[in-house]
Length: 157
Image (cartoon, rainbow, N blue to C red; front, top):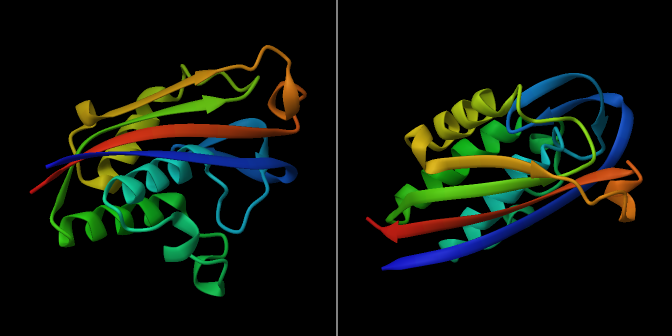
């Protein structure tokens, strides 16, 4: 059996925090507000995987509790990967898109793919990360926040 899931996450800019995207800290750019590290790429991937497997959503499994305060989203992805495998699912692939005017992802893309694939315990060829802008429109276009969307395909193991 194959199942597809989609995920979406959004966070506003927080000048006082580091920016973490796909498990990589991006220097010289304001971070994002959130309970964990606010990694919109990892959060969208996690939600897509959970949805594909019919296992709820990010907020249900990782509530805004002290346990997850400032947590690395790679830790969340590791737990999602373990949960899927325990429930009999194999991750076929994930594809995530950051929606933001900046930063440019090209210098960090390979590291993001490495970190996400390691956290999910899958070959890096199963992970895609890319970016687009909103051409100056909306909250992402005004630089007030960032969003990410992701899709995932899982198969029964």
